[in-house]
Length: 257
Image (cartoon, rainbow, N blue to C red; front, top):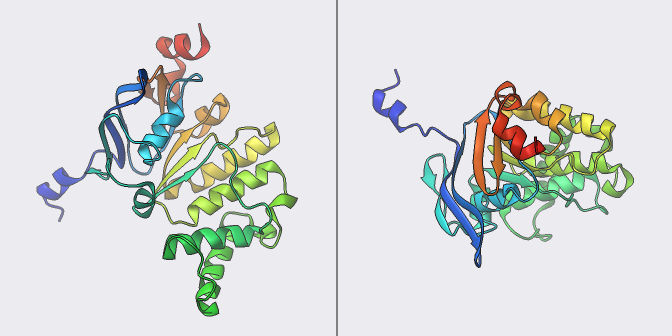
Protein backbone atom coordinates (compact mmCIF):
# COMPACT_ATOMS: atom_id res chain seq x y z
CA UNK A 1 0.00 0.00 0.00
CA UNK A 2 1.30 3.47 -0.90
CA UNK A 3 1.80 5.64 2.17
CA UNK A 4 0.45 9.17 2.47
CA UNK A 5 4.01 10.43 2.90
CA UNK A 6 5.09 8.78 -0.37
CA UNK A 7 2.20 10.35 -2.25
CA UNK A 8 2.95 13.75 -0.75
CA UNK A 9 6.60 13.42 -1.81
CA UNK A 10 5.73 12.87 -5.48
CA UNK A 11 6.59 16.07 -7.39
CA UNK A 12 3.73 17.75 -9.24
CA UNK A 13 5.88 18.13 -12.36
CA UNK A 14 8.49 16.00 -14.06
CA UNK A 15 10.24 19.17 -15.21
CA UNK A 16 9.67 22.72 -14.02
CA UNK A 17 10.92 26.27 -14.37
CA UNK A 18 10.01 28.20 -11.23
CA UNK A 19 10.02 32.02 -11.31
CA UNK A 20 12.78 31.99 -13.90
CA UNK A 21 14.28 35.16 -15.37
CA UNK A 22 16.81 35.48 -18.19
CA UNK A 23 18.58 38.72 -19.05
CA UNK A 24 21.10 39.51 -21.76
CA UNK A 25 22.59 42.72 -20.46
CA UNK A 26 19.69 45.15 -20.07
CA UNK A 27 17.45 43.04 -22.33
CA UNK A 28 15.00 40.90 -20.32
CA UNK A 29 13.97 37.93 -22.50
CA UNK A 30 12.14 35.93 -19.83
CA UNK A 31 10.84 37.46 -16.62
CA UNK A 32 9.54 35.64 -13.54
CA UNK A 33 8.24 32.70 -15.61
CA UNK A 34 6.79 29.64 -13.89
CA UNK A 35 5.90 26.67 -16.08
CA UNK A 36 5.61 22.96 -15.28
CA UNK A 37 5.34 19.79 -17.33
CA UNK A 38 3.51 16.76 -15.94
CA UNK A 39 5.00 13.32 -16.54
CA UNK A 40 3.74 11.10 -19.35
CA UNK A 41 2.20 13.89 -21.41
CA UNK A 42 3.04 15.73 -24.62
CA UNK A 43 3.32 19.44 -23.86
CA UNK A 44 3.56 21.96 -26.69
CA UNK A 45 4.86 25.50 -26.34
CA UNK A 46 3.37 28.08 -28.68
CA UNK A 47 4.13 31.73 -29.14
CA UNK A 48 5.12 34.32 -31.74
CA UNK A 49 8.74 34.84 -32.72
CA UNK A 50 10.63 36.43 -29.84
CA UNK A 51 8.32 34.98 -27.20
CA UNK A 52 11.25 33.30 -25.43
CA UNK A 53 10.49 29.67 -26.31
CA UNK A 54 13.96 28.54 -27.38
CA UNK A 55 15.53 30.57 -24.58
CA UNK A 56 13.34 28.60 -22.17
CA UNK A 57 14.62 25.34 -23.67
CA UNK A 58 18.19 26.58 -23.27
CA UNK A 59 17.51 27.34 -19.61
CA UNK A 60 15.90 23.93 -19.03
CA UNK A 61 18.92 22.13 -20.49
CA UNK A 62 21.42 24.54 -18.88
CA UNK A 63 22.80 25.58 -22.25
CA UNK A 64 22.19 29.04 -20.78
CA UNK A 65 22.43 29.98 -17.09
CA UNK A 66 19.37 31.50 -15.46
CA UNK A 67 19.53 35.10 -14.25
CA UNK A 68 17.12 34.25 -11.47
CA UNK A 69 14.76 31.51 -10.36
CA UNK A 70 15.08 27.73 -10.28
CA UNK A 71 14.97 24.74 -12.64
CA UNK A 72 13.64 21.53 -11.09
CA UNK A 73 13.84 17.98 -12.44
CA UNK A 74 11.60 15.49 -10.64
CA UNK A 75 11.25 18.06 -7.87
CA UNK A 76 15.02 18.46 -7.38
CA UNK A 77 16.87 21.66 -8.24
CA UNK A 78 19.25 21.26 -11.19
CA UNK A 79 19.85 24.97 -11.67
CA UNK A 80 23.59 24.70 -11.09
CA UNK A 81 24.21 21.53 -13.08
CA UNK A 82 26.08 21.46 -16.39
CA UNK A 83 24.34 20.44 -19.65
CA UNK A 84 25.93 16.97 -19.73
CA UNK A 85 24.81 16.39 -16.14
CA UNK A 86 21.25 17.31 -17.10
CA UNK A 87 21.45 14.84 -20.01
CA UNK A 88 22.70 12.08 -17.73
CA UNK A 89 19.66 12.62 -15.52
CA UNK A 90 17.38 11.66 -18.39
CA UNK A 91 16.77 14.79 -20.45
CA UNK A 92 17.24 14.53 -24.23
CA UNK A 93 16.94 17.37 -26.72
CA UNK A 94 16.71 17.80 -30.48
CA UNK A 95 17.43 21.18 -32.05
CA UNK A 96 15.82 23.45 -34.67
CA UNK A 97 18.42 22.49 -37.26
CA UNK A 98 19.27 18.84 -37.87
CA UNK A 99 22.58 17.96 -36.26
CA UNK A 100 23.11 14.39 -37.45
CA UNK A 101 26.35 13.26 -39.09
CA UNK A 102 25.47 13.21 -42.78
CA UNK A 103 28.42 11.01 -43.76
CA UNK A 104 27.42 8.28 -41.28
CA UNK A 105 24.65 5.73 -41.72
CA UNK A 106 21.48 5.77 -39.62
CA UNK A 107 22.89 2.88 -37.59
CA UNK A 108 26.20 4.62 -37.00
CA UNK A 109 24.52 7.86 -35.92
CA UNK A 110 22.30 6.10 -33.39
CA UNK A 111 25.07 3.80 -32.17
CA UNK A 112 27.41 6.75 -31.63
CA UNK A 113 24.80 8.51 -29.49
CA UNK A 114 24.21 5.34 -27.48
CA UNK A 115 27.96 4.91 -26.94
CA UNK A 116 28.44 8.47 -25.74
CA UNK A 117 25.47 8.15 -23.39
CA UNK A 118 26.83 4.91 -21.94
CA UNK A 119 30.51 5.86 -21.68
CA UNK A 120 30.58 9.65 -21.88
CA UNK A 121 32.48 11.94 -24.22
CA UNK A 122 34.70 10.61 -26.94
CA UNK A 123 34.47 7.26 -28.64
CA UNK A 124 37.32 5.03 -27.50
CA UNK A 125 38.27 3.12 -30.61
CA UNK A 126 40.65 0.96 -28.59
CA UNK A 127 37.81 -0.70 -26.70
CA UNK A 128 36.77 -4.30 -27.38
CA UNK A 129 34.63 -4.94 -30.43
CA UNK A 130 32.11 -7.03 -28.50
CA UNK A 131 31.14 -3.94 -26.51
CA UNK A 132 30.50 -2.15 -29.78
CA UNK A 133 28.47 -5.14 -30.98
CA UNK A 134 26.08 -4.88 -28.04
CA UNK A 135 25.52 -1.18 -28.67
CA UNK A 136 25.07 -1.79 -32.39
CA UNK A 137 22.36 -4.34 -31.61
CA UNK A 138 20.62 -1.80 -29.38
CA UNK A 139 20.87 0.85 -32.09
CA UNK A 140 19.51 -1.52 -34.73
CA UNK A 141 16.62 -2.53 -32.48
CA UNK A 142 15.73 1.11 -31.81
CA UNK A 143 15.69 1.96 -35.52
CA UNK A 144 13.39 -0.97 -36.26
CA UNK A 145 11.10 -0.11 -33.35
CA UNK A 146 10.80 3.42 -34.73
CA UNK A 147 10.08 2.24 -38.27
CA UNK A 148 13.45 3.38 -39.60
CA UNK A 149 15.01 -0.04 -40.03
CA UNK A 150 15.01 0.18 -43.82
CA UNK A 151 17.54 3.01 -43.55
CA UNK A 152 19.84 1.18 -41.15
CA UNK A 153 22.78 1.07 -43.55
CA UNK A 154 21.89 4.24 -45.49
CA UNK A 155 24.01 7.38 -45.07
CA UNK A 156 22.02 10.27 -43.62
CA UNK A 157 23.07 12.41 -46.61
CA UNK A 158 21.16 10.08 -48.95
CA UNK A 159 17.69 10.64 -47.47
CA UNK A 160 15.24 13.56 -47.37
CA UNK A 161 15.44 16.32 -44.79
CA UNK A 162 12.29 14.91 -43.21
CA UNK A 163 13.98 11.55 -42.70
CA UNK A 164 17.02 13.33 -41.27
CA UNK A 165 14.75 14.97 -38.69
CA UNK A 166 13.34 11.54 -37.78
CA UNK A 167 16.91 10.27 -37.44
CA UNK A 168 17.73 13.16 -35.13
CA UNK A 169 14.85 12.18 -32.84
CA UNK A 170 16.08 8.57 -32.94
CA UNK A 171 19.58 9.77 -32.01
CA UNK A 172 18.11 11.65 -29.05
CA UNK A 173 16.15 8.57 -27.96
CA UNK A 174 19.34 6.49 -28.11
CA UNK A 175 20.53 8.39 -25.04
CA UNK A 176 17.58 6.81 -23.18
CA UNK A 177 15.90 9.98 -21.92
CA UNK A 178 12.81 10.08 -19.75
CA UNK A 179 12.08 13.64 -20.85
CA UNK A 180 12.33 14.61 -24.51
CA UNK A 181 12.62 18.24 -25.65
CA UNK A 182 11.82 18.79 -29.34
CA UNK A 183 12.67 22.21 -30.76
CA UNK A 184 10.56 22.79 -33.89
CA UNK A 185 10.76 19.20 -35.20
CA UNK A 186 8.84 20.04 -38.40
CA UNK A 187 10.73 23.25 -39.26
CA UNK A 188 11.58 23.38 -42.96
CA UNK A 189 9.54 20.29 -43.84
CA UNK A 190 6.98 19.85 -46.59
CA UNK A 191 3.38 18.97 -45.73
CA UNK A 192 4.03 15.30 -46.45
CA UNK A 193 7.20 15.25 -44.35
CA UNK A 194 5.40 17.12 -41.57
CA UNK A 195 2.71 14.43 -41.48
CA UNK A 196 5.37 11.73 -41.15
CA UNK A 197 7.11 13.50 -38.28
CA UNK A 198 3.79 14.22 -36.56
CA UNK A 199 2.79 10.55 -36.79
CA UNK A 200 6.22 9.52 -35.55
CA UNK A 201 5.96 11.76 -32.47
CA UNK A 202 2.41 10.57 -31.76
CA UNK A 203 3.67 6.98 -31.88
CA UNK A 204 6.45 7.47 -29.33
CA UNK A 205 4.65 9.86 -26.98
CA UNK A 206 3.18 7.19 -24.62
CA UNK A 207 6.74 6.26 -23.61
CA UNK A 208 8.07 9.71 -22.69
CA UNK A 209 7.36 13.09 -21.19
CA UNK A 210 7.65 15.30 -24.28
CA UNK A 211 7.99 19.08 -24.41
CA UNK A 212 7.78 20.45 -27.94
CA UNK A 213 8.20 23.89 -29.48
CA UNK A 214 6.21 23.95 -32.71
CA UNK A 215 4.82 26.65 -34.99
CA UNK A 216 2.53 24.50 -37.14
CA UNK A 217 -0.85 24.79 -35.49
CA UNK A 218 -2.31 21.58 -36.91
CA UNK A 219 0.56 19.56 -35.46
CA UNK A 220 0.16 21.14 -32.03
CA UNK A 221 -3.62 20.82 -31.90
CA UNK A 222 -3.71 17.21 -33.05
CA UNK A 223 -1.11 15.54 -30.83
CA UNK A 224 -0.68 17.72 -27.72
CA UNK A 225 -2.08 16.77 -24.33
CA UNK A 226 -1.44 20.25 -22.98
CA UNK A 227 -0.49 23.52 -24.66
CA UNK A 228 1.42 26.41 -23.07
CA UNK A 229 1.41 29.80 -24.81
CA UNK A 230 4.18 32.34 -24.28
CA UNK A 231 4.41 35.98 -25.31
CA UNK A 232 7.22 38.44 -24.55
CA UNK A 233 8.87 36.08 -22.09
CA UNK A 234 5.73 35.36 -20.08
CA UNK A 235 3.21 32.52 -19.93
CA UNK A 236 -0.17 33.87 -21.00
CA UNK A 237 -2.24 30.67 -21.21
CA UNK A 238 -2.14 26.91 -20.62
CA UNK A 239 -4.73 24.24 -21.30
CA UNK A 240 -6.07 21.67 -23.71
CA UNK A 241 -6.26 22.26 -27.45
CA UNK A 242 -9.94 23.20 -27.14
CA UNK A 243 -9.25 25.63 -24.31
CA UNK A 244 -6.39 27.31 -26.16
CA UNK A 245 -8.37 27.52 -29.40
CA UNK A 246 -11.05 29.55 -27.62
CA UNK A 247 -8.70 31.78 -25.61
CA UNK A 248 -8.96 35.42 -26.69
CA UNK A 249 -5.62 36.40 -25.13
CA UNK A 250 -3.94 33.74 -27.27
CA UNK A 251 -5.67 34.99 -30.41
CA UNK A 252 -4.55 38.54 -29.65
CA UNK A 253 -0.92 37.62 -28.97
CA UNK A 254 -0.40 34.83 -31.47
CA UNK A 255 -2.62 35.82 -34.36
CA UNK A 256 -2.84 39.57 -33.82
CA UNK A 257 -6.64 39.41 -33.67
